[in-house]
Image (cartoon, rainbow, N blue to C red; front, side, top):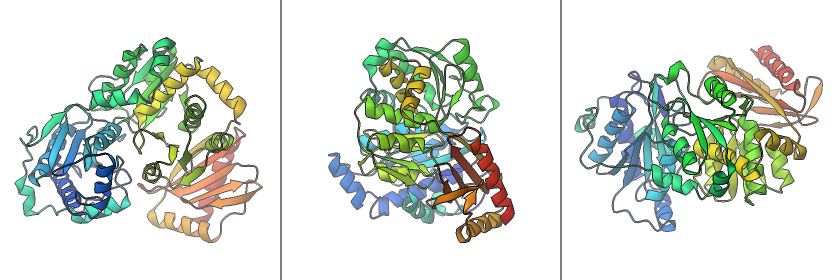
Length: 494
């Protein structure tokens, strides 16, 4: 195991029993403890936390941290290790009784007036991957400033302090208390969903929690509001059925079959910690987040009369632009990574934030992405409009122009990636596929917007040695052509 523990864009993540061990969780928890006890803004005596408490009329005599876990192998036991380390530092701890979705933990942080939450989760990684997410008091994943502060406070593997906490799996410090946050969270969602329309809709919805934390939420909420539910993968399986549980089209093959076989109105799914979602239409087709996010935005504006600014990652579909422009909503691009969207959602000025990989945040909830809410809003849209998904889609594209997108990832060394980015910065292409480059957006990598509105984007992955290429156009065949051009551009450099 490496002596240095580093966070990625959504927390610490590593292979179970390699980088993720009881000791590494202890070390991370101690780093977090020092952060919340000492940081001048995000800590217990910090300006930011005090302001949050004043706004919510919350008073805490000592630091409070929530601890949760997903359905992965040993996640609960590692959560207890984290809770014990926090308690050892004099921090009050509430541990979730059941597997806790990340968005539920974020919501609970705000409602409990906590300094933050630790969630032991591998998110949508393979079965042997685990991790730790730190959620700060504002109800979102830790930003760059927080991460940098925690990392420098993490003790080394030989630190004497590590011996003070029990690493006994299954043992929870007597000072910690437990709680089930599910009932209160689902009651909160009822204020965001037209439950009356749900009860009158006679909808049939297929669910696939992918053996993750959503199994405690999807069925309960829908059946309470008279929706007929057919489900799969609601049991326990730490191997996730042998698939990578990412709510993408490959992982949802069995949900597709269920939707078609049972003639369901929609299929909904969440990845194991519920920060992302996947949808299947009645014909068994996976619905791209680039399509459903603009449709949900349109639903919020037309049917719920919601207003506010919109933010989206720079490589999210321009279909969002059409909906925003048609409704007079200001739109802002962010770099890739939902933490940038969260920073804007915290301001209270934004109605919705979205990213192309399946993340949606909505005002009046948490400032971070919530796959559970996204699924329920899709069902809410069907119930409110009293139409099939095919009818909704047809009506939507009477108002807006359809767009088609494609993306690929290409492995490259760090040296090659740096060379590609430097060359594109110094000498970018002025035309692509015999079409002039109208504008270059360098918010994250390079997005070449062509005359006519089509675009090609090239950016490095922030977590892997990959170059990612994205393309979008009105012509269904053009994205593949632009992707091919993007590959040529890269290969000409390296």
